[in-house]
Image 1 (cartoon, helix red, strand yellow):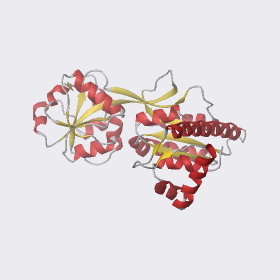
Image 2: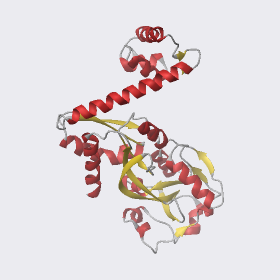
Image 3: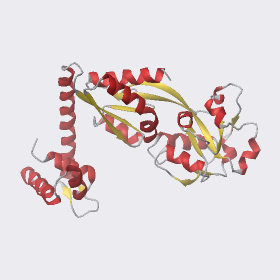
Length: 315
């Protein structure tokens, strides 16, 4: 690989020479000179500097795709070499959405690092759609998410999740469903899993304002599908980035949202909400840990998956 390719890739990630220079701890003029040197060696222009943020030229896209392939090959080679060290060195890149990385992964990472002190763990956070693409491109090793395509990924289930409707306690619509309300204590005791726990029809809330995650999130897809099945298009007040943000906005009284029981049980303190069990499909999903098919799964990756399953089985 040409000298300076790491600099080129960082500029691509940051979409900015100044941002990349800060990440690389080099001066912006030095970074710009290094990138120009690579462009001169290749005989192409990689970045269109007239746009804001800067963008890739057609040749630049080919260059970045090649860099990513070479980085993936290098990462796989290091994994295989590290396996020969009997787990005394190596790394694993784990990815997840914000809620999962905040509430689910910490216990797993702590136990893994205590067991395998020589293995470093890198955490990447983003949206579920972005992360699955990164998993396919081998930019990350393991993803904790929902609904893995078995044609593309090998996955290991961790837990089932139930989707519940969260409504601020102050909303007058709650008066219609006094016998269906679930309290914080009901959620803690998993009352919603009882067969005799009544469900609500989501269409009863069609006049309320919803908080729906942005496109690319699994919860966006499920929320829109549930509303469509109930015969209406939700009136969306805000599209938050993260499920935890949507839930906290609901707690503040900004609107209603669909959340998971895992989130509710992880959160502490009074919710200032009431909850409802929903009827129909798409109200259950599996939390799983997966990696790309047809790639070399390092011993560190396999050990991390095993550690995660053991930690979850104790909960």
